[in-house]
Image 1 (cartoon, helix red, strand yellow):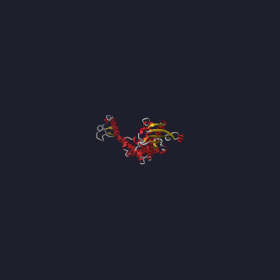
Image 2: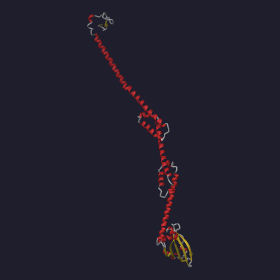
Image 3: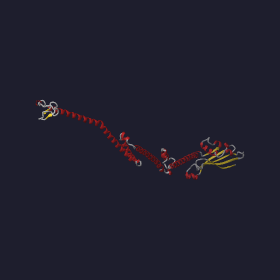
Image 4: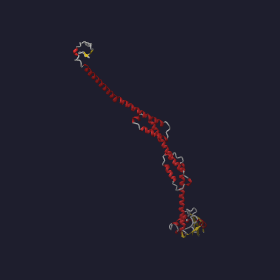
Length: 338
């Protein structure tokens, strides 16, 4: 192959002049241009290398663009989609659990939904636009729990009151007071639910009546015992009225008080302290034989003898001191004569 010495254009074998620049081709130049193809191949290699470098740089540029620009945008979009999907799931759960009536049985579903919500990120939570419905449902559930607690506590008192047998109540009964304490521990709302509270008041009145009766009975027993002690310790007396009474002993004082509560001896005698007095105990034999000696089947027969207050002849007063009720001594006049 041959080339133009001036412009390096490849010439055909039969061409003498260069078709490009017109320079005449000399045969002796053939050898000098023999290495021309080698130079051309070197230039092509350089061009190819440059192209490859450009391609590599372009690819690296695209990679950088993808990593620093496109990849973050794709990642953000993917995250937003995930956030929205998870938020939508919770939104649907809230709608599902709150659209129906909230009952005490709803708590498990509400808690499950609340757990799902709590598992979200803050960003995802901000997308849940119906969380207020879940809060309202929990508020309703709390009200139902309070209502149930009120009813249960009230029912406990109701049952306790209903279990009382009023005919078995005694003065020593403590069950009614225990129920009252239970009732007093309730709130006003709970108390209003106790539908038989009036029965509790009625039973308290019965117990109070029993207590009063027991106290009266105890007083009666005490007084009866005092009278029996009197009858056992004072059998008889003979002497002046001035030498008889509480200043001697309590038993004489008891008889003295019964007499003075009914009469004044000065209305019967001139000088009461000098009036002669006799006293002796009498038992109602038939009653004593049947019932034993007690405060009602024993009494004292008493005789007073002294000068009349009108300075007439001596007068005699016959009387009796007994206890018809078994508790109190009573004076009864039998006769007053000359």
